[in-house]
Image 1: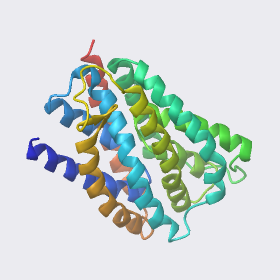
Image 2: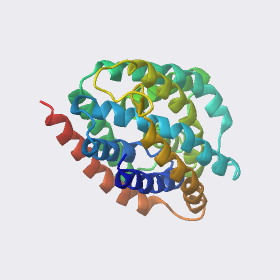
Image 3: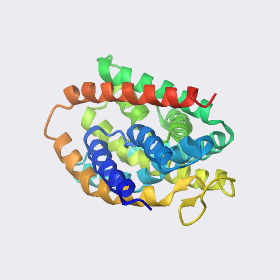
Image 4: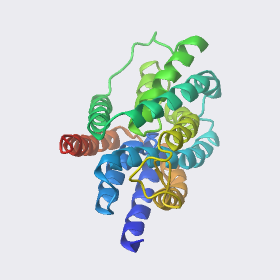
Length: 271
Protein backbone atom coordinates (compact mmCIF):
# COMPACT_ATOMS: atom_id res chain seq x y z
CA UNK A 1 0.00 0.00 0.00
CA UNK A 2 1.15 3.52 -0.83
CA UNK A 3 2.41 5.18 2.38
CA UNK A 4 1.36 8.59 1.07
CA UNK A 5 -2.22 7.33 0.99
CA UNK A 6 -1.90 6.07 4.57
CA UNK A 7 -0.42 9.38 5.81
CA UNK A 8 -3.24 11.32 4.12
CA UNK A 9 -5.74 9.12 5.93
CA UNK A 10 -4.06 9.78 9.28
CA UNK A 11 -4.20 13.55 8.71
CA UNK A 12 -7.86 13.19 7.79
CA UNK A 13 -8.49 11.22 10.98
CA UNK A 14 -6.83 13.83 13.17
CA UNK A 15 -8.95 16.62 11.71
CA UNK A 16 -12.28 14.79 11.79
CA UNK A 17 -11.72 13.49 15.33
CA UNK A 18 -11.11 17.03 16.55
CA UNK A 19 -14.25 18.32 14.79
CA UNK A 20 -16.32 15.42 16.14
CA UNK A 21 -15.47 16.42 19.68
CA UNK A 22 -15.80 20.16 19.04
CA UNK A 23 -19.07 20.26 17.10
CA UNK A 24 -20.70 16.89 17.83
CA UNK A 25 -20.94 16.08 14.12
CA UNK A 26 -19.47 12.56 14.23
CA UNK A 27 -17.11 13.40 11.38
CA UNK A 28 -19.06 11.49 8.74
CA UNK A 29 -19.98 14.50 6.63
CA UNK A 30 -16.27 15.25 6.20
CA UNK A 31 -15.04 11.66 6.03
CA UNK A 32 -17.35 10.49 3.26
CA UNK A 33 -16.30 13.09 0.64
CA UNK A 34 -12.60 12.81 1.55
CA UNK A 35 -12.74 9.02 1.59
CA UNK A 36 -14.32 9.23 -1.86
CA UNK A 37 -11.46 11.43 -3.10
CA UNK A 38 -8.66 9.33 -1.58
CA UNK A 39 -10.12 5.94 -2.49
CA UNK A 40 -10.79 7.09 -6.05
CA UNK A 41 -7.12 8.06 -6.41
CA UNK A 42 -6.13 4.73 -4.86
CA UNK A 43 -7.96 2.86 -7.62
CA UNK A 44 -11.24 1.85 -5.98
CA UNK A 45 -13.80 1.04 -8.74
CA UNK A 46 -16.07 4.02 -9.44
CA UNK A 47 -19.24 1.96 -9.06
CA UNK A 48 -18.27 1.07 -5.48
CA UNK A 49 -16.24 4.04 -4.25
CA UNK A 50 -19.11 5.97 -2.64
CA UNK A 51 -20.52 2.80 -1.03
CA UNK A 52 -17.08 2.06 0.45
CA UNK A 53 -16.58 5.68 1.55
CA UNK A 54 -19.90 5.77 3.41
CA UNK A 55 -19.43 2.33 4.96
CA UNK A 56 -15.89 3.11 6.14
CA UNK A 57 -17.04 6.43 7.53
CA UNK A 58 -19.69 4.59 9.52
CA UNK A 59 -17.09 2.14 10.80
CA UNK A 60 -14.82 4.90 12.07
CA UNK A 61 -17.67 6.51 14.00
CA UNK A 62 -18.05 3.26 15.92
CA UNK A 63 -14.68 4.02 17.56
CA UNK A 64 -14.56 7.81 17.59
CA UNK A 65 -17.96 8.10 19.25
CA UNK A 66 -16.66 6.15 22.25
CA UNK A 67 -13.77 8.55 22.71
CA UNK A 68 -15.97 11.60 22.24
CA UNK A 69 -18.79 10.48 24.53
CA UNK A 70 -16.38 9.61 27.32
CA UNK A 71 -15.04 13.15 27.21
CA UNK A 72 -18.53 14.69 27.21
CA UNK A 73 -19.84 12.32 29.90
CA UNK A 74 -17.02 13.37 32.23
CA UNK A 75 -18.55 16.87 32.06
CA UNK A 76 -22.11 15.58 32.65
CA UNK A 77 -23.11 16.66 29.14
CA UNK A 78 -24.83 13.41 28.07
CA UNK A 79 -28.59 13.09 28.59
CA UNK A 80 -28.74 9.31 29.06
CA UNK A 81 -32.55 9.22 29.27
CA UNK A 82 -32.75 10.47 25.69
CA UNK A 83 -30.11 7.97 24.56
CA UNK A 84 -32.01 5.10 26.22
CA UNK A 85 -35.29 6.02 24.49
CA UNK A 86 -33.86 6.74 21.03
CA UNK A 87 -31.25 3.95 20.78
CA UNK A 88 -33.62 1.04 19.90
CA UNK A 89 -35.11 3.01 17.02
CA UNK A 90 -31.64 4.07 15.91
CA UNK A 91 -30.46 0.44 15.75
CA UNK A 92 -33.39 -0.60 13.58
CA UNK A 93 -33.14 2.44 11.33
CA UNK A 94 -29.37 2.18 10.81
CA UNK A 95 -29.51 -1.49 9.74
CA UNK A 96 -32.36 -0.68 7.36
CA UNK A 97 -30.53 2.36 5.95
CA UNK A 98 -27.39 0.32 5.24
CA UNK A 99 -29.40 -2.27 3.31
CA UNK A 100 -31.12 0.44 1.27
CA UNK A 101 -27.74 1.99 0.40
CA UNK A 102 -26.41 -1.37 -0.77
CA UNK A 103 -29.21 -1.53 -3.34
CA UNK A 104 -28.74 2.01 -4.68
CA UNK A 105 -26.38 3.16 -7.44
CA UNK A 106 -23.49 5.57 -6.85
CA UNK A 107 -25.53 8.36 -8.46
CA UNK A 108 -28.43 8.10 -6.02
CA UNK A 109 -26.18 7.72 -2.97
CA UNK A 110 -24.13 10.77 -3.94
CA UNK A 111 -27.29 12.77 -4.64
CA UNK A 112 -28.88 11.84 -1.29
CA UNK A 113 -25.67 12.65 0.55
CA UNK A 114 -25.31 16.05 -1.15
CA UNK A 115 -28.92 17.03 -0.41
CA UNK A 116 -28.71 16.20 3.28
CA UNK A 117 -25.36 17.92 3.70
CA UNK A 118 -26.68 21.05 1.95
CA UNK A 119 -29.63 20.99 4.35
CA UNK A 120 -27.43 20.41 7.41
CA UNK A 121 -25.00 23.16 6.40
CA UNK A 122 -27.84 25.63 5.94
CA UNK A 123 -29.29 24.84 9.38
CA UNK A 124 -25.83 25.10 10.92
CA UNK A 125 -25.08 28.43 9.22
CA UNK A 126 -28.32 30.24 10.01
CA UNK A 127 -29.12 28.60 13.34
CA UNK A 128 -32.28 30.08 14.84
CA UNK A 129 -33.77 30.55 18.29
CA UNK A 130 -36.44 28.04 19.39
CA UNK A 131 -39.71 28.93 21.10
CA UNK A 132 -39.25 28.70 24.90
CA UNK A 133 -42.19 26.29 25.27
CA UNK A 134 -40.84 23.71 22.80
CA UNK A 135 -39.49 20.43 24.24
CA UNK A 136 -38.44 16.95 23.12
CA UNK A 137 -41.15 14.29 22.58
CA UNK A 138 -41.76 11.39 24.97
CA UNK A 139 -40.32 7.86 24.75
CA UNK A 140 -42.48 6.79 21.80
CA UNK A 141 -41.65 9.95 19.88
CA UNK A 142 -37.94 9.53 20.61
CA UNK A 143 -38.10 5.92 19.32
CA UNK A 144 -39.61 7.13 16.04
CA UNK A 145 -37.18 10.01 15.84
CA UNK A 146 -34.30 7.60 16.50
CA UNK A 147 -35.47 5.34 13.66
CA UNK A 148 -35.47 8.28 11.24
CA UNK A 149 -32.03 9.43 12.41
CA UNK A 150 -30.70 5.87 12.03
CA UNK A 151 -31.94 5.48 8.44
CA UNK A 152 -30.65 8.86 7.26
CA UNK A 153 -27.31 8.49 9.08
CA UNK A 154 -26.67 5.08 7.50
CA UNK A 155 -27.56 6.45 4.06
CA UNK A 156 -24.97 9.24 4.30
CA UNK A 157 -22.37 7.59 6.55
CA UNK A 158 -22.65 10.08 9.41
CA UNK A 159 -23.03 9.73 13.16
CA UNK A 160 -26.37 11.52 13.28
CA UNK A 161 -25.14 14.75 14.85
CA UNK A 162 -26.15 16.73 11.77
CA UNK A 163 -29.76 15.77 12.59
CA UNK A 164 -29.85 15.20 16.34
CA UNK A 165 -27.98 18.36 17.42
CA UNK A 166 -30.29 20.75 15.49
CA UNK A 167 -33.37 18.83 16.69
CA UNK A 168 -32.31 18.96 20.33
CA UNK A 169 -31.35 22.64 20.26
CA UNK A 170 -34.65 23.32 18.44
CA UNK A 171 -36.34 21.72 21.46
CA UNK A 172 -34.45 23.95 23.92
CA UNK A 173 -31.71 21.49 24.90
CA UNK A 174 -28.55 23.46 25.71
CA UNK A 175 -25.97 23.20 22.93
CA UNK A 176 -23.28 21.49 25.02
CA UNK A 177 -25.73 18.82 26.22
CA UNK A 178 -27.03 18.40 22.66
CA UNK A 179 -23.49 17.81 21.38
CA UNK A 180 -22.68 15.36 24.20
CA UNK A 181 -25.92 13.42 23.76
CA UNK A 182 -25.41 13.34 19.99
CA UNK A 183 -21.98 11.78 20.54
CA UNK A 184 -23.60 9.02 22.63
CA UNK A 185 -26.23 8.39 19.94
CA UNK A 186 -23.42 7.98 17.41
CA UNK A 187 -22.37 4.61 18.82
CA UNK A 188 -25.60 2.62 18.18
CA UNK A 189 -25.89 4.32 14.78
CA UNK A 190 -22.37 3.26 13.83
CA UNK A 191 -22.64 -0.26 15.30
CA UNK A 192 -25.82 -1.11 13.43
CA UNK A 193 -24.75 0.73 10.27
CA UNK A 194 -21.31 -0.91 10.11
CA UNK A 195 -22.85 -4.36 10.53
CA UNK A 196 -25.38 -3.55 7.81
CA UNK A 197 -22.63 -2.48 5.39
CA UNK A 198 -20.62 -5.63 6.06
CA UNK A 199 -23.70 -7.68 5.18
CA UNK A 200 -24.76 -5.65 2.14
CA UNK A 201 -21.20 -5.60 0.75
CA UNK A 202 -20.45 -9.27 1.36
CA UNK A 203 -19.19 -11.02 -1.81
CA UNK A 204 -19.82 -7.95 -3.99
CA UNK A 205 -17.74 -8.34 -7.15
CA UNK A 206 -15.07 -5.72 -7.86
CA UNK A 207 -14.01 -5.13 -4.25
CA UNK A 208 -10.44 -6.07 -3.19
CA UNK A 209 -11.70 -8.39 -0.44
CA UNK A 210 -10.18 -9.20 2.93
CA UNK A 211 -7.76 -7.97 4.37
CA UNK A 212 -8.42 -4.73 2.43
CA UNK A 213 -12.20 -4.72 2.65
CA UNK A 214 -14.76 -6.36 4.92
CA UNK A 215 -18.02 -6.04 3.08
CA UNK A 216 -18.04 -2.38 2.00
CA UNK A 217 -15.69 -1.30 4.83
CA UNK A 218 -12.11 -0.45 3.78
CA UNK A 219 -10.03 -1.77 6.69
CA UNK A 220 -6.70 0.13 6.19
CA UNK A 221 -8.61 3.43 5.88
CA UNK A 222 -10.64 2.53 8.96
CA UNK A 223 -7.52 1.77 11.01
CA UNK A 224 -5.60 4.90 9.97
CA UNK A 225 -8.45 7.31 10.67
CA UNK A 226 -9.52 5.67 13.94
CA UNK A 227 -6.04 5.77 15.48
CA UNK A 228 -5.71 9.51 14.92
CA UNK A 229 -9.31 10.55 15.59
CA UNK A 230 -9.44 8.80 18.97
CA UNK A 231 -6.51 10.94 20.07
CA UNK A 232 -7.93 14.26 18.85
CA UNK A 233 -11.67 13.90 19.68
CA UNK A 234 -11.17 14.60 23.43
CA UNK A 235 -9.23 17.76 22.54
CA UNK A 236 -12.18 19.02 20.52
CA UNK A 237 -14.64 18.15 23.31
CA UNK A 238 -12.54 20.02 25.88
CA UNK A 239 -12.46 23.16 23.73
CA UNK A 240 -16.21 22.89 23.03
CA UNK A 241 -16.94 23.36 26.74
CA UNK A 242 -14.80 26.47 27.03
CA UNK A 243 -15.86 28.58 24.04
CA UNK A 244 -18.75 29.74 21.87
CA UNK A 245 -18.78 27.40 18.87
CA UNK A 246 -21.30 29.45 16.81
CA UNK A 247 -18.67 31.30 14.69
CA UNK A 248 -16.86 28.01 14.04
CA UNK A 249 -20.09 26.37 12.96
CA UNK A 250 -20.61 28.99 10.28
CA UNK A 251 -17.12 28.43 8.92
CA UNK A 252 -17.68 24.68 9.06
CA UNK A 253 -21.00 25.11 7.23
CA UNK A 254 -19.09 26.78 4.38
CA UNK A 255 -16.80 23.76 4.15
CA UNK A 256 -19.82 21.45 4.10
CA UNK A 257 -21.27 23.34 1.12
CA UNK A 258 -18.05 22.70 -0.80
CA UNK A 259 -17.95 19.00 0.14
CA UNK A 260 -21.62 18.53 -0.77
CA UNK A 261 -20.95 20.12 -4.16
CA UNK A 262 -18.06 17.73 -4.72
CA UNK A 263 -20.27 14.73 -3.91
CA UNK A 264 -22.99 16.04 -6.23
CA UNK A 265 -20.42 16.38 -9.03
CA UNK A 266 -19.16 12.86 -8.27
CA UNK A 267 -22.70 11.51 -8.50
CA UNK A 268 -23.43 13.28 -11.79
CA UNK A 269 -20.14 12.06 -13.28
CA UNK A 270 -21.34 8.45 -13.00
CA UNK A 271 -24.23 9.07 -15.44
